[in-house]
Length: 95
Image 1 (cartoon, rainbow, N blue to C red):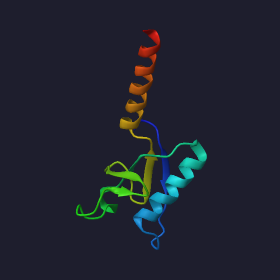
Image 2 (cartoon, one colour; image 1 turned 180 degrees about the vertical axis):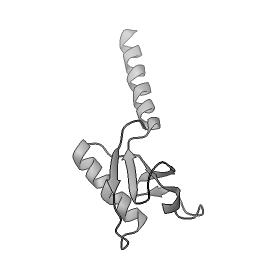
Image 3 (cartoon, rainbow, N blue to C red; image 1 turned 30 degrees about the horizontal axis):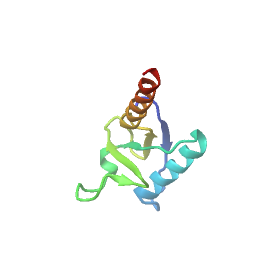
């Protein structure tokens, strides 16, 4: 992910999933697209026995993200998949 939105939420009463859901809702309202990935400080993630997914958004650890901050956006995999679909459509039109 090259471009994303930085979200801050230090409310101790909210779970990680609730915080990510709020950030994802705001992102979708502001940018008109649902985010697919959210980078968080590794210390905020639950133990590995739980899924790395919250509110439909994949969680990824990043030491460069400060605690209580969420770097949320559309991951590179989704962007590449969209580019492949568009490229295939252009190739069909050219034939």
